[in-house]
Length: 130
Image 1 (cartoon, rainbow, N blue to C red):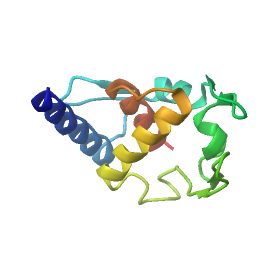
Image 2: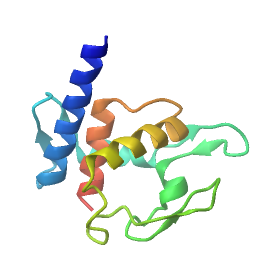
Image 3: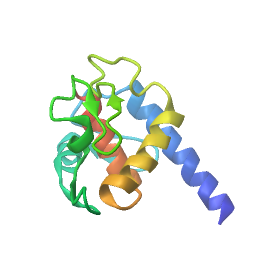
Image 4: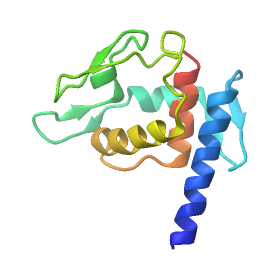
């Protein structure tokens, strides 16, 4: 089990490196046999999920906002979240460990579960396209 988790982590970090270094088309194929799709990522980003009161409806936009070139604010803590669009925040996806950390935390809070590798790839593809 531990060996399988390590392999999954290595594959995920490989995916992050591939996505963070080269994304120019609508889809990208990488070494973990995941095809990232910008449109699927956009749908995931905008989709509402059932949360726990008082935050009964959640989406990525709840905190990051609809205009990803602007700062967002966490709906619970009110903390400022830097712009997600790489066009205005060139450091946004430069650290794979931070990307993995925030995916884990934000997927659990927003979707109520950990994101799959496919979901992460799709969301990253969408965000990298901005």
